[in-house]
Image (cartoon, rainbow, N blue to C red; front, side, top):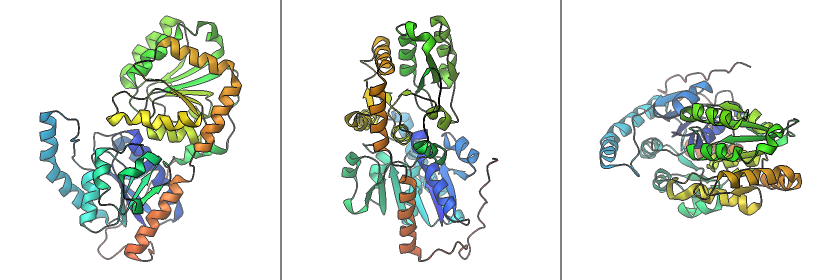
Length: 383
């Protein structure tokens, strides 16, 4: 079975696709996965680094753009569809999955026109524009929140959760890594989060008494690394500061508490890794979907949530201090998070994709069909 995964732009769209790809290629030695995105998105770097084939199309977003960017996006549409058609003809996938982001639209619609089975994976409680449109055409819509079901056909919707990368799944069965200090992991997504970074620095002044008892690990994002570093130095705190954390599995494993945004992929990772969290939704997320995402964890008792506009350094410090000084609260949040985890999401989505292929193509033998180019081999990562 060959799966083509389209979309990306941010880690929230891309990493569930990576998780699904890992599941597909481990099922049969002749299964393979091709990714399609843009050269500007995170996928251009992350997909090849994970050993998968990557193809780029030229595409731009349409929603929320100014007049000039909207015009550029519209002018690019014919080229986006042509390049999508060319890639589909080159790889001839058995099924195409859109994972969100504007680049997934032309690819999935082109596949639908070519009568290739199509599906989408919606990570958030409130779907984005691209997936709302694609929902009218696909054979299957995979969602992670009950709220998202209302946007897609009941007959084609599967509530299965967000796929989680294999390296993170190991945390579901592992105990917390032992350590001496109370460890707080702070991050704002793959690009960082200036509002969150600022409030963490402000909170340090109210955590002075706990300085020797805290271990802070902070992903700052590329643009804020030096500013955040200076803030810690001025407050007299030492911390492990990184522009980007590549090994999130190790970072989660060592954390007692996570302070972060509320992107759907992040929440899925928190629940599978069973981590208590303080969530600060991105205030400019489309339709405020991060706050809607976060509500599911808050209602279950797995997280606290603060709106960025209402959050001060003092409030954040008080929340961290309270959870540190009341380990029984952390234990309850940890248990609640674990009950929400869906570690089987990638496997269950792959099962549905396989069924779509069987309905369309019959038994897949793993052999190339007539006229199909040889498949690029997936690179094996060094141990």
